[in-house]
Every structure is written in C-alpha cells, then in structure tokens.
Length: 296
Image 1 (cartoon, rainbow, N blue to C red):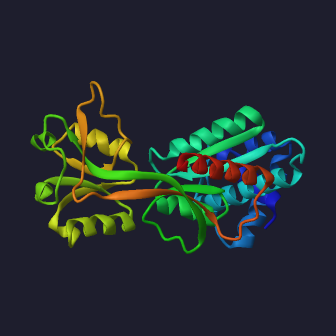
Image 2 (cartoon, helix red, strand yellow):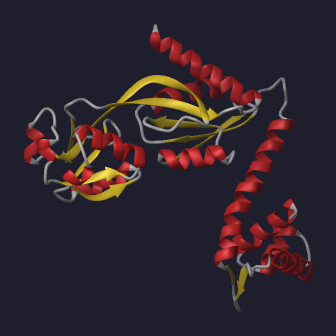
C-alpha cells in the first residue's frame, strides 16, 4: 500500500466525491477511480458506498481512514523533522494532556520558546491518560502531561513539581457545601459522577476504604467541563481535581477537598528510547529548567 494511494483515499473521504477529489488532486476521474478499485481489491474490502450524489465510507473505510490519517500525519512530521534547519529552530511539538492546573508549567515553557523561536509550533490534544498514552505509543504525540496514577513501564518521565488535589464539585446551595472537607461517609448514598479512568477508579476505591460499589456512582466522565454542567443543573456531585472548573465569583459551584487528603502528582512522559528532534530536545530541556527553578 503506497503512501500516495492513502493520500488519494483521504481526499475522496474528505470531498465525498470522486470528481471533486480528482479536481483537487489535478488528475482525471477515471485514473482516481481505478486507483481506489485497485486499493479495494488489494485489501479485499469494500471501502466506499457509491451513492448518486455523494460517496460515503463503509465500516472498513472508516477504519482505514483513521489509520491512514495517523500514517500520513506521522510521515509528514518525520519529513519536517529531518528537513529542519539546524541553525534556525523550527518544527512542531505535539503534546497530549489531561485537565490539570499543572499544565501552567508547560504553558510557561511554550511561551518562552515561542518568544525566542517563532517558527516552532505547538499542537495540544486534550484527553484522559489512556487516550494520551495510546497516541504516544503510535508516535502521534511527542509528550504527555499525565496525572498519576498511570502505568509508566513504557515511558520515561519527569515530575512537574505540582500536585493536584482530589475533592468534590457541588452546587454552592448544597448542604455539604457548608463543610470544609468531605469524608467518605459524607458521600454515602449521594449521586456521584466519577472519572472513567480505570486507575483513577482504583485510587478512589482506596480512599473509600473498599469497593466503589459502596458509593452511588450514577455516571462517569472523561473530561470535567460537561460533567460540571450536570452538577450545576442537578443534585449530582463530581469527584474531581481542584482548579479545573472556575468556582469563584458568580459560579453556582464550589469545590471541597477530600479527607483523608488525596493528592496526585502531575508528570510529563515520553516514549522510552525515543529519538528526539532538535526542537523536542530544546522543549524538554526548558521543562527541566522550569522544574529546577520551582524547586529553588
């Protein structure tokens, strides 16, 4: 399977038309159609549903589209890194991150690099730890900002000298809002929203002192913002990290920390034995400098 053929396929998927794709690619429609028929024969799969007005993808076509986007993107990034000017720092850095106030450390590093090297571009992907590590494994992300706990066997990492605090997000008019801290007993029987990350669930179960089924978990979330809307419009509580949702001023919500205290380290990870581009090396060095500065 040639890279060029995948690029043709992606163009058709985007344009939803052989004729428009052929026009975009500056080639004839019969030639492009033949390329796609050859691809389907090679794979032994039907990739397109050819309608009268538009072309859509079959389930196999959708799978190929997802993988083709990853492959083409990785090739383009590799070419850019190899061709980068050694004297002028250029290139792209891809960073995945969970929701955490600790990302401010990375934001400061990004700001410093871009002020000095304006041709360096940063691309942020937000997602839970499993999503970020999967993309690192596939080579689609250079670094991940992860909130522990996480399995680090496949990664090198640095602690960002920042800890997130676990607690409960609730409405300010909720009767538990009068408490300074929240115990497991306070939440017994209350409708809870919890992170859907497996290792986070284990951490919460440890805080409870047993099985999560002791709690009334009515739903899960991967990123907190949408969960906060449910909390705002209902009697639900969200087990979450502090400072992700703004609870100041006119906000209807408040945050109360857990007791016994439960904190989580924020770390930056990258794939073991990764060969860094010059741009990635500079970024990691600046992160190390920022961490050292905070420890003084």
